[in-house]
Image (cartoon, rainbow, N blue to C red; front, side, top):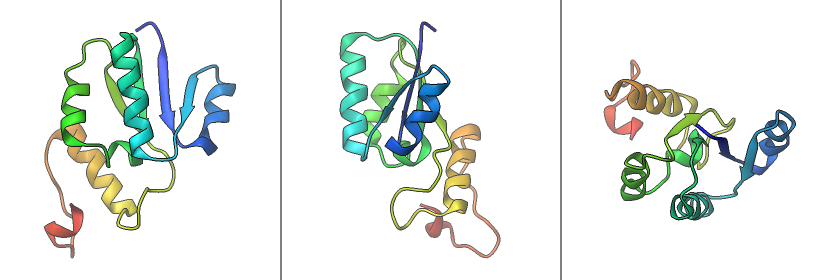
Length: 116
């Protein structure tokens, strides 16, 4: 990898920049997708770390294109508070587990539809 790109919420950018990381703050998913698209088009090479709250709301077709990119692999990083009113800590954990192992899980006492 030639560099590390971090895409997160604006409030978290200074911490990453203090660590010497190329961090970019975005307010919404659309801005995040536009910035990533710009990097893919420019042929940027590096590892992309994306706030999991942003990643969870990205367009499925866009994520498939990003996943097939050889020059810009990505991973989810915890970004603090979830985006959107439906997001809960359990939802975020289940999404991270699903991405890591490929299986959808539910917590005791919850309906499967509550986690989607």
